[in-house]
Structure formats: structure tokens, C-alpha cells
Image (tube, rainbow, N blue to C red; front, side):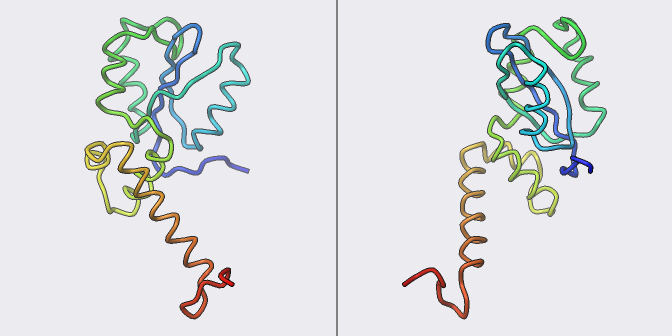
Length: 148
């Protein structure tokens, strides 16, 4: 069974709580699945810093961009250039990232528009959309079937 669920590649930045090292990686799976796999192999607690939707070559481009901060493999020192990139070009909340992915996939939003809206607004819109879906699930003939 394939764990690939995202149409676009998710480029992610995670950081070790103690070492402060930052991993720049990519996945087409859910962030939670990827974090679980990485955490199982790490003695350090890993924290999601941010991510953006890209393409497979985006990760290599970032590795090359930040090569002066590379420690080993996909792990980098927490250089200002990297933290500035995360702050300016990434979404730091998984809910906002998934909502943006969904809206971009449907052609209703660009990544630039998602960044301009920001994490908080994207999460609010996600909540409204989710509540609308739940309401439709529990409405029959215009009446809430859970109401007494």
C-alpha cells in the first residue's frame, strides 16, 4: 500500500529540539506520517518549523542554496538565511499547509495567495470548510438529524 497522498511535493523543515539542527526534506505523504518515520530514528525530539508546496527538484535547490550551512546529508545548522527563508516562504501550521494544498489542487488559490493570507486565516478557512462538510453530513431534508 502506498502512503503517497499529496499531489504536490511537500518541502519541509524540521528541527531537533536539543541539537537545533534543521533537516530540509521532501515527502508526498502526510507530514504526520513523515515526522513519525523520522522521529523513530532520531534521539532528539523533532519539531516542524514550516513547509511549502514544491516539486521534487525544490529540495535539491534548497540544499544547494544553503550548502554553506550543511552539516551532513540533509541536516543544516540553524543559519539566519534558513530561518529567514522559513519565515518568509513557508507555512508553519500543518492545517494551513493542507488547506492550501487542497485549494491549490482545486485551482482556487495560488501558493503566493496562501502565503499572503497566512497561517491563521488559512486555518480559519479550513475550519469553516470542515464545519460545512459536517453540517451537510448531518442534515437531511433541510433539518439537522442530530437535533432533538
